[in-house]
Image (cartoon, rainbow, N blue to C red; front, side):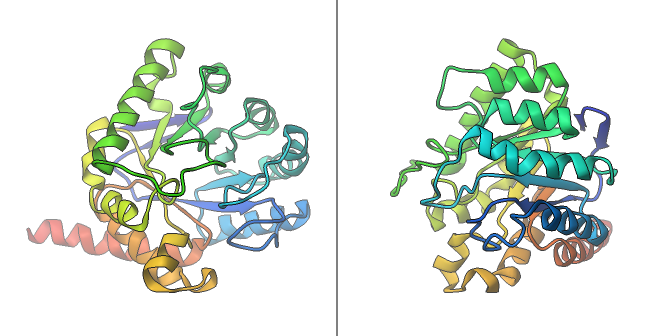
Length: 285
């Protein structure tokens, strides 16, 4: 299995990639806007790379529940200076976390290689985001959410959340391949933990990750510090690292290829140790 994003190529199986999160927003749920300043964001991103991040995910609009949407102009003002500076200093792929085609296009021009689209063009007939991806040979993260990312249902209902998310991927991949011509090698799948799911839905998806191997695409899992951990365990945001690591380790065991996290150093260490154990276990079995 190969993943291509412009000049970058990753061949799987290989050790799981760790994607470091850089929120260039004043209202991030995870870091309270500590990296809203461009210089602080760049310094933080460089530290994440030093800690072992093999992808950087830069976002300029918070997706926490109740977040205020920002204009395209404001999102560009936040992220483009950060991407330009990082592209000149790092040798890892830079991902732009956005639902706006204009932001994606500008970010790719500034040096990004991947578009992390939590909207996945699922609630519109406008496929301009996909055209941006196709025109730039960019990597593309397809994330599942049962509604607009900033207006998700408060009480989501699924008959079978694993089956419905799998059906969503089937429909999106078919459209991208047949209607727009995005090669499968450029696509990553993300089940959308925490986006329009109850804690039970999130647990079911994490327990059913092996189902998504059928698509033979890299699987990205983002559980870092998410609210379902707090709801299940009563842990505040700053105290959710142990549970986040537990999810990451089990996700890698069950086929996750990319772990998106705020805590890169701890996640790299935990995942690498888990992989070392899993490889020995296979030999024993």
